[in-house]
Image (cartoon, rainbow, N blue to C red; front, side):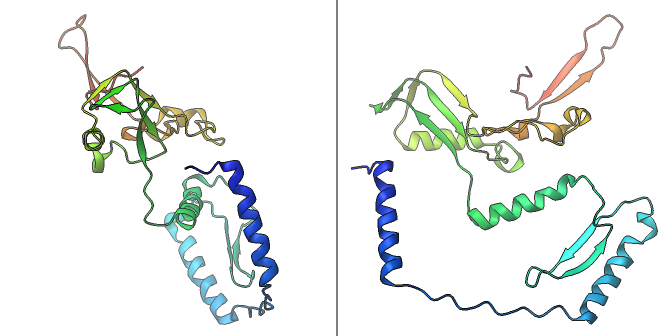
Length: 230
């Protein structure tokens, strides 16, 4: 029997209250973290300065702030107050949050769903391909993703589907474009909109080959070959 969600919450709150009342825990005071040694700070300053003042970075703009996570001490700054677009460095925060929350072994699933039970190997009604944000689907490491899903479907006893195949990308509810994107970004391959169901990174490459003679139709090559640009 499935426990209703609304009934589960009070049980959790009750257990938490009993646990806290029966076994209060004394929190020891946090020991003060000593500041970083001046010699270490000076070494860090010298190493960063030597890097950013190289001739190849003569036209680069740097904004740097290094802060100790243990003590909160500012260890190095260089134009830290200068406003810059973080660009792809923002991915570091996304990656850190995902690793901390989900762990390194987590795999983003892509699900096959049905609205009716399977009877004698037949699924009546639509088969729903439900994406949950896997960015690798259809890329170089998973070009056989459709075959893998079909094999898993067969392993669950489905031999025939009597209905439509529906691609559902509704798992993501936020905007498809980044707030800081510019119009020129939308013309580049990296400007593809985000989607919970992305195949081949949501990219279709179209190559136009000119005709041999004027007035004749050009030839289009589409990659992936089964993609149909809309």
